[in-house]
Length: 349
Ligand code: MRU
Figure (cartoon, rainbow, N blue to C red):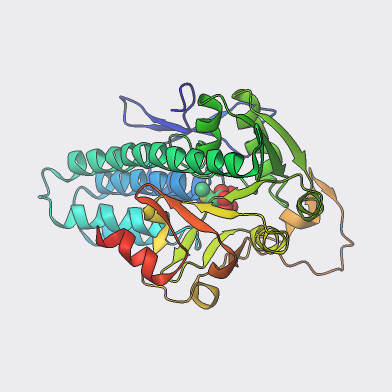
């Protein structure tokens, strides 16, 4: 993983050890998952998070469910359904559960546990391959931007965390950044703090620091100002679900960055493995389910209340960036326009 790092490990004793992302960067703690319920809980309480890793842990959850039920039966089906419902927006979760269930349906009772273990491992192995390809396509784009602007360095802005903690092996949005570093490109990353869970400040900054990549953390409202002052060459984010028309759901606040980028003529890319497409959704703005989270994530910072007790709070987890604001989608199958035809062609190959 990224040379040195891993978001989770499957042990020989069949337990899954995951990095507890809730306490990074100040505490390095892991949590052991032993059952489908443990996997559901880890997804719900965000011990693990990020579209890809949510899908990976969901897949291992289905494998645990097979061990618990001993085969494809009502109990197994019920557990798989519960895993699928653990978070609503990142479609990698539903994609991984469906894939596992389809394999289970085709497997005999005797083989099911062994077969599902293999499938869960192969889902994360495939993510590694996808991530490497995204890294290369994205780094090529960075090089072209530098060439066009006749610059010897590049300033990239990203939102939330789409690195190796979110998708094995190098992430999605951070994969081209890691690759740029490997290519010797002089790269600097503006890291949006990403309130309220601070995935940018806590996780992306930590990842970049570990890899010696130049970066600066900014609060979520700074990006527009930097773009107006020529301090951002390109924006790149991950995605949690992309509709067949190119509308892309990502962590709350992504849309506003895309608007600012559009206004300042700065390219805005979304990097994603194809498992993040939901081709069944034709209009992402209307139909992508958006997670509404606990208001206390906003009301408190580090256990300190910052909002008057009687003031209502709305904690929206994701927003949808309309396709028209997206320069292109960077996937393992190549780079495509964020529109129905280009996305279809990606899958026609
Ligand atoms: O709520 P989270 O932390 O699970 O949010 C998902 C994300 O990590 C981001 O939206 C990310 O940019 C896309 S996931 C690779």
